[in-house]
Image (cartoon, rainbow, N blue to C red; front, top):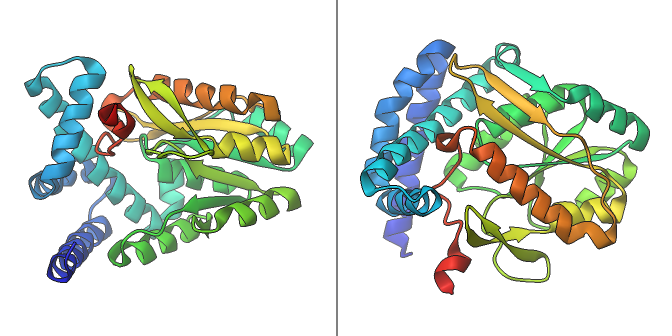
Length: 292
């Protein structure tokens, strides 16, 4: 990408982010779904490549028509904007945000925490995964691994996560720090649903009927450190509140790394089917399938 294009993209991102921040400041919680609609339309029009990827992913995952895929894709974009608004609003009013999140499965997870003193939470870009992390951080010391975004957004994202109780680790060089956290007693949060590429730390698994590359990192870390692995996810409910779900933790041996990665893939697909429009279908998730 040439320098003028990068500058224009950076300026556009800054303007959009400032608009979203201002709206989050003044809007009431219950108004966020309404105000997210015009913003999501703007995003839909300004990201033709992501729009095309989203529609194509939905068509192939659900074997539906172009029209049906477009209608669902528009809801995906609205969910993306609504997630951002909720996240920014939570940074301004953390207590109110946490009151809007119900959590299931916490008692069993705490039993494992008390027994092992370390846990790995693994999830995907479903519902409002930021509020999920914040809710867990109210109960347990949580470090989240994150890849720095563009300069226009990264400092805001990092600042809000820290206000919500999460400690942020830069994804670059994160494995060593993650191992240290788990060995010293802590919990780690990982988003592991994006395209993983190729390499020894990845594997190809059927996901919504097509081959997709997944990271084995969560299972590898669990096997190496003895930290139980917890699949978790969030769903936005019709009333605008959130239900965060923590599945029973699993202990992973070195021989179970691949089967545990398949387990995560299957649980993620099952969770997405509960609210398909709340997952980030705009990721280029099936690069492997296209290349074959």
